[in-house]
Length: 230
Ligand SMILES: [Zn+2]
Image (tube, rainbow, N blue to C red; front, side, top):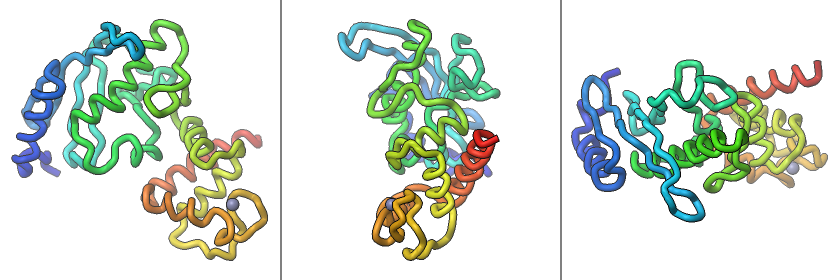
């Protein structure tokens, strides 16, 4: 696949214009791929005073804008470990893939991404450096979610408002299937048929989460649950 910017000349011009206007501490570097590089300046969420600066390089993938931009911290401050929400290759983990529909919705611009999820991620990283713990809330999301499969399970427990990993597993079983009869028992465990219980929740997430992603989440969480049960 060739990089998006060779064909979508207007989109590249828009990216350059938006970055120059809205995040002028960043530059757009166009080579074989497009990278946005610079310093993210953070202000204190309450006082508005200068708080921190993070050196970042954000690679726009070949399938941009569908594909999620890939964020790396370039100052060597954050170790590349799961406990700090960094993958083994140094890329930042800003949210679980199951929550991409919420944090990187279709139509989000690069500067909305920088000033939204990226800013929130590095506010949390600064908080961690200063205090040794994650903030409970950051933006409109939790700041203290785990990395990896456990983080995915936590995300789904919040979305489905359940404390039961088994409810999440049953929900993802249904979500990963092409079609589920409304006569089947609801995933929530009420004993009612789906059509008289949580059918609308299932329908809502069918629109948000593709089948492949649902199958992936189901696999990761079923595995996690099986290791709980021993
Ligand atoms: Zn139900």
